[in-house]
Length: 140
Image 1: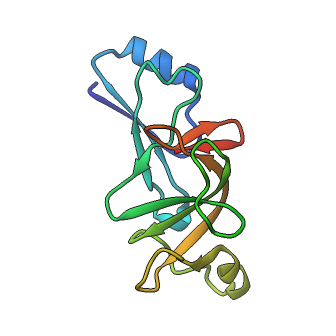
Image 2: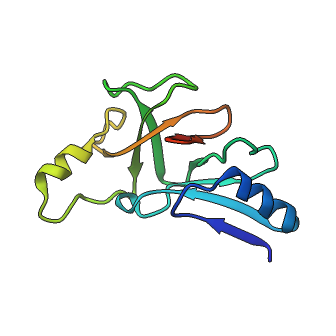
């Protein structure tokens, strides 16, 4: 086995460590993303350094992540705030649910061409190299 890909739920650091020990020849990837953003938005190649938490990683090409405060301003590194997603994989909204669509899909304040962001409801914080994932808080 050369690759192990985990997606759908948070990857516990203990499990990642076990996989890396039992399959030292395999690359272990952690992916993150909700249905509203075409399932996977970020990727992370796990290492033995991910002992406390496994990051959700960096955005896949043509997708983007922002960790924003209540005023839609970027959160400082290490500060937990809401994770927003954008890019080509973003859904148009919820079928026949205009109010929910308006609540969750908001104008992208960083896109001069009128793009949108999806409010995930997930808390995240920036680590030095990636988005962080701790109980209740995802790490980018």
